[in-house]
Image (tube, rainbow, N blue to C red):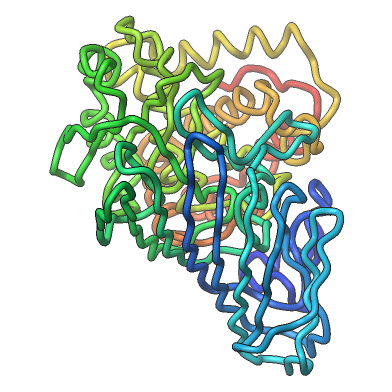
Length: 450
């Protein structure tokens, strides 16, 4: 990564003259300003998959803005835009909402942008399949990673552009609605209910999410943090089997990684099957197939929980550094396996090392390329890289490093270089050779030894 990108990630000023858009997703994100808060007023009709929204965005300009853009899918129609209470001209083409204020906004100027929009939200199709708003048999969910947020609200869709959120969603009263953060209020009016959530810890757009379905809430624990499950009543019979160790996982990961970074944690279980679970800030979403009474999805339960530390709180500044999310969450699976009486982390590392050795790749872990960044080898090689680091610096230093990592960059944005720099403080010997072999060389190194 070039020096100016690393510097920008530490300052997190996406849109400043020193910054640039992510080359992995060059059509996402916007320059010239920074959004600090999203206030979303949404009304969703389940039967017709109809969404009406008013998005109020609080932003600050970094340059003299005569015109700026937001990311917004073409499946949504814009009916009105104001900037500082004045109606303005806009155009909506190629997934960009271009806005021209009545008068240019000076550098450092504050803006309140209000966008009214409506439509039938659909996933955004791309190199990683369909991402974003997904209609279920009865309800909806959001799976935004990496660029699906614009399928349901106007945004600056870049992982570095974190903001706080207030999400109010009104839907038919029989349905349960969940969004990021803490439920602030719930108002029932005739046949509709409005659920209002506050997400005060800064959040990347790809982690914003709404879940609507015929669900009930079950409390799993109140300490060390509240842990809940939101699921169809028919699946509660399997909850103890498939998610019975969820609270133990929270306690184990708090010990291994540091304090849980958000006020509460929720597992959502949709009434439909899902190919893979979905991470969001403060909750994770699983399919009915993950709650089938077999406990076969326990590693996925651990993986998604670990993302609350690695991905949701401490978030990559550029998509090329995806191993900082997936490698860490995958290694958390192995740590939980060992803690819970299964295979040790070393046994899992050896198991997947053999698989990686049988299927060589030609790109580096530190820069896998946009099409390969969610490939399984990134997850597994990232986890083995952490295991190699652990064997090199010892358990005490390794877990002290993870605690420091989640504390120093809590709610922040990071790069691979940030982790390399921090790890140097926990190693009695230089680590350059380790990083060169595991992060910056495509060939698989020899299996790590203490």
